[in-house]
Amino acid sequence: MADMMRTGLAALTASQRALATASHNIANANTTGYTRQRVELASRRPEYVGGGANPQFIGNGVDVTSINRVYNSFLTEQTRNYGSSVGQLETKDRWISQLDGVLGDGSTGLAPAVKQFFASAQDVANSPASLPARQALLGQAETLAGQFNALDGKMNVLRDGVNQELSGAVTTINGLAENIAKANQAITLSPGGGNHAAPDLLDQRDQLVAQLAEKVAVNTVIQSDGSMSVFIGNGQNLVMGLKANMLETKPSPADPRKLDIQFKQGSSVITDAFSTGEVGGLLAFQNQVLDPAQNKLGLMAAGLAQTFNDQHELGMDLNGVLGGDFFNSGVPTVGSNANNTGTGAFTATITNIGKVQPSDYEIKYDGANYSAVRVSDQKTILGSGNLAALNTALGNDGLSLTLTGSPAIGDRFLVQPVRTAATDFGVKIKDPNLFAAAAPIKTSADQDNSGTGKISAGEALDAANANLLTTVNIQFTDATHYTVNGVASATTYASGEDININGWRIQLTGAPGTGDKFQVSSNTGGVGDNRNGLKLNELQTGKKLLNGTSTYQDMQSQMVSEVGAQGSATSSTLKTQEALQEQAIQARDNVSGVNLDEEAANLMKYQRSYEAAAKVVQIGDSLIQTLLGMLGR
Image (cartoon, rainbow, N blue to C red; front, side, top):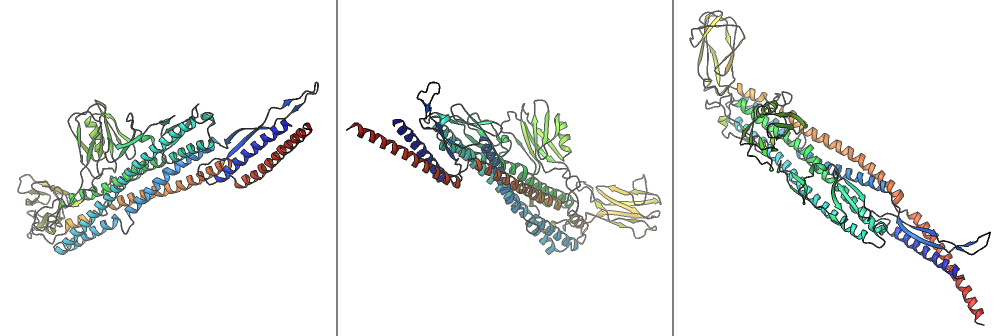
């Protein structure tokens, strides 16, 4: 009868714990990160009661061996990995959407300002002497400059926002790492040892790791004491047992406008190790979307300023003076890495704006030779070579470097040809009289010429030529030869052939007669001349950028379309990853999640079991009382 009581009490205990566990599951059905728990039962070792050749055993009831999580490590890790991917894509998509909004559409972005500016330039070409038209042109130029400045400024605001969010994400990572280390401590110190820690403690730690995975890619290893080691990025240790290795952000030594991520202890930079999670999304947006867009904006600004200035300098203003620079624009910058130990410093010059690429360049010095990589496509443009070879390689992209000082082994430099061009873009001339709409030279044929020869209007080629405005007389000594300014040696005449003198070009056609005279002179007073104004207006449709493949509008369209394409691709991939994440979560929940219908059925089952066990105890007690009553008589 005592055996019966012991068995019944064991059954009561088992049923009670099963009821408590089912209740706990139901209570946490909606708790994030909760894993369903299950009571593990085992029959006690039976008691031998004899029987000789036919041994007999009587059962001793049941033991609760453990209360475990219904846990699948593969499904949990899979869900966590999808969480990292979704975190990266969500962040990148959100920031691309902001940049897309900054760039605007065809009616509010940069393109309308460019069109309106050239429309005003055409108005001046139509009425070159009109001061109102010239003033309107300067006004549209200021509007265009303001649009460049504002757009570049908004991109810089986005860059600052990315840096702030990156710093915030690192702070969050540090907090999660500390909490995981504390969870490790609680688990290792729990009764029974870390490998038998309370399931709820393990759930809490897993939830912390899942939150960490949203920030950065995570790998975990369970140690023999039950603690979890957490590795991020490409295997960098963030948590080891009870210790969390703190991260920090600092301005990049290569580009101070960017942040590097490094460990506080040891200062090991691990920025390149982050490819997924929120941190990976921020870095991807900055490096793959924002930098290229800002460089394209800069190339558009630098290209417009340089080509417009070059042509403007070949014209003449209302004061009879050669045109000067119409626009201001930023100059190339070369940053020396903050970790450099040498005294070397570079200055960069754009030698051919038509060849310049919308990209930064990384230059390294090994003590004897230089190497250079174009960042936009990671193309090595120079594997190894001296300064002359470096300039030859960069010359293919329209750049030239000048070195002062002496670089040391391992020194690095970052060349940014057009990154600040839109920031510094502005209108240099303020007086409408200074707009050079006229050509600087004029041509004429002597009225007494006897032949049918004609002279073209001519065009300026080199504003720097000191003799550009000097009068030049051409006289034919016979039908096939002419002299220039009475020089004794005659030049053979070919109809339509280019004649280049003093930085200008003309063509003579027809059949000039002996003694016929032609003249090229300064166009001072030619206020009604619009030849240079027409050439300036032609720049709008001229393919002056990217080796003759792009107009200004093409560059702007390329910038907008590439951001849009990145946004579309990111959004599409995000939807796919979200669907895969949902499937992974569903698969995990099918194994580890709480099914309320199942738990309700368990409650009824364990209730019946408890009632039956109580009946066993009741009967056992009744039998003992009966026996005691008989013995007391």
